[in-house]
Image 1 (cartoon, helix red, strand yellow):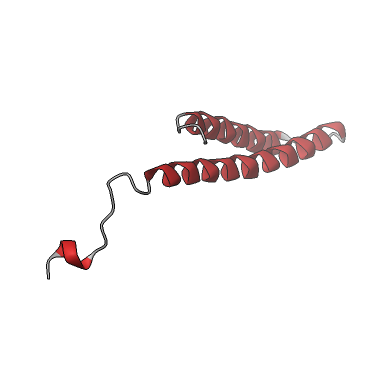
Image 2 (cartoon, rainbow, N blue to C red):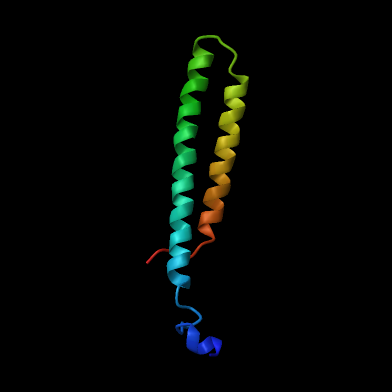
Length: 83
C-alpha cells in the first residue's frame, strides 16, 4: 500500500482557519488570566501603600504582569480577525 491510500486525503488548508481562531482564543484566555492577576496585584499594592507597609515587590510584580499583558495583546493583534 502506498501512503496516499492509507491516509485520508485533506486539502492543504483544511484545518488552518480553525487553528488560527483557536490560537486567538488561547491568547484571550491567557490575557484574561494575566488581567485577573494584575487587578489582584494592584489591589494588594494599593493596600500595602495605604497601610504603610513595604510594597516594592508587589509593585514590581504588578509591572511584570502588566508588561506581559501588553505583550500578549500585541501578539494577539497579529492574528487574523475572528469570523
